[in-house]
Image 1 (cartoon, rainbow, N blue to C red):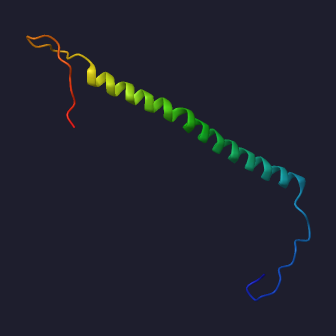
Image 2 (image 1 turned 180 degrees about the vertical axis):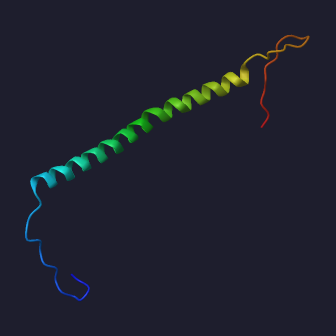
Image 3 (image 1 turned 120 degrees about the vertical axis):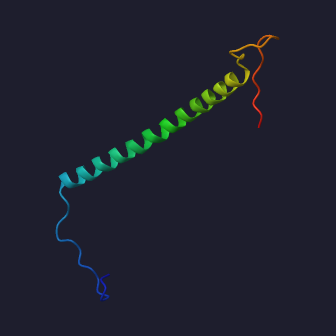
Length: 79
């Protein structure tokens, strides 16, 4: 409906096949981009989390670079 309360007139001509194909192509590209981002997140986040845990334990338990008179010590983080 229009602002004045009248019904809107229907368009007199239908969109061409080229316009329909262009709209479908744009929708397909957008859908493909969103799907790519989703699967990238699904496969990348677990790898990053495992790498973070591995690096944490490596940094926590790696022997010290400058051993004291009693030999190498284990570095412990204090939280």
